[in-house]
Length: 222
Image (tube, rainbow, N blue to C red; front, top):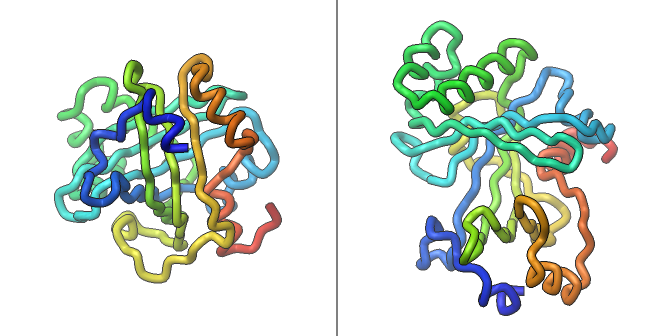
């Protein structure tokens, strides 16, 4: 697969060469006490969302994290994110103090943080599960919004605090150890990507790391 796509993509510039162009993705997902977001996915609800905090940096003190709201509207994926310093997260999540953090942000990021706090308050969302994995990523040479990613060694742990974002103790690996290939594009899949998919014989499949990880701990039927 790498040989087939190399003429059309470059490695993600944020991935260090010394690690084989891989980096660790850390995502702390929020859900309701009844795991409504999990059940919306299982029930096939066409309009749904994920609320999470994501980091690509192993240093917990002063690194950059991203507050994210990822929405699915039928077949469209929409994602908004707000970058913050990890040390500011508790203050940013607080209903009273969050405004002072937001005031220093650009307007678009300020709105994202405001919507994030609204969802937390409206639906009583709490940190629920931490999911980490190793990612090898490529970006299109002529279009940096076109991405091909390989996600490997998915592991998770149930959690309930913002500080859990950087705790690796007690992780459980997914039983299905296959690599997850994702092809991301705006309008239509480019011809070279179509040829790659056909040659590999892969089929489009919905894979939710969140649902699989919840099931690994809770044993819910998938």
